[in-house]
Structures are given as C-alpha cells and as structure tokens.
Length: 170
Image 1 (cartoon, rainbow, N blue to C red):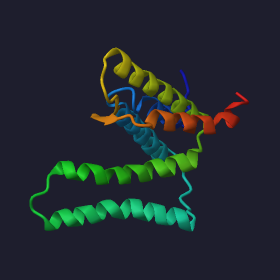
Image 2: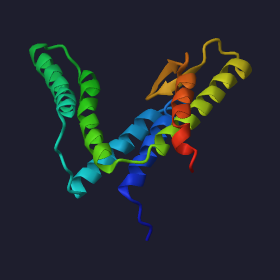
Image 3: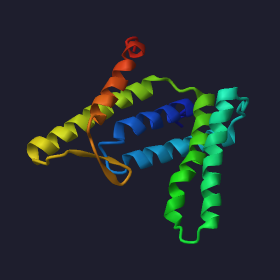
C-alpha cells in the first residue's frame, strides 16, 4: 500500500493550482477543489492547533464574516439567485485551506515549480493562439471563464523566479 502524507497532497494541490489554472479549462476550479478537500480531510483526521496571532484572527474573522454579510443582504432582497452565493462561500473554503496549510506547512517548492510550469504553459498557449490561430488577444482559463492573458504569464514567471534560490538546492 502506498502511503502519501497530507504534506505531499496539499503540496501537490498547490502545485496544480498554479500549473493548471490558466492552461487547462476548469484547471483552477478542480485544483482548488482538490486543495479544499485535502485540507478538510486533514483538519478532520488530525489534531490541529487553532491558536492564532492578532493578524490571523482578523484575517479569519473577515473571511468568515464576509459571506455572512452577503447572506444577510440576500435576505433583505427578494430577487437574488443561488449563483450569487457562489462567490462569497469561497471565503469559507479559504478558511479551511488557511488552517490546513498553516498546520501542514508544505514545502514552498510546490508553489514555485507550479508557478514556473504555469507560466511556461500559459506563455506557450498564448504564442500558439497568436501565431498559429491568429487570435488577436490570447486568452487563458480561470474556472470555466476565458480571461485575457495580459501579463499573467510574466507574473507567474516572476513568482517562479522568486523561488529560484530555495530551489537551487534540489
């Protein structure tokens, strides 16, 4: 039987979040869902220290209270739809991910390697779209939505370069 630690699972999901977010349709959604599920499983099966600093308390309180304010607003308005509730609920999922990542402390190489591969794949996708398909404005994917690349590939590349020094000892 293969044993995989939560540290590697959460690291893998962070890697996938950056590596697939722009290049694959629904890559961001699926990798974020994988991260939330891994984090929730970790929090459910392990004893976690929930003591927080003052800054972390403000962060968690704001991530919890924002969806509550949206729900309260929706109660006072009759013409809302369930799709409007989708965005604020992500903050509650972010609380789960926050505590899991804070407790597990995955290696930063997952983030930087994922950002590097994400930048390369986004750049190759943009070159293919502009040079082969002759699309005037190249696009990537964020969830099911198409988004313009602008300088996103360059930003991911710069993030990957920031992690070069820690990766030097691989």
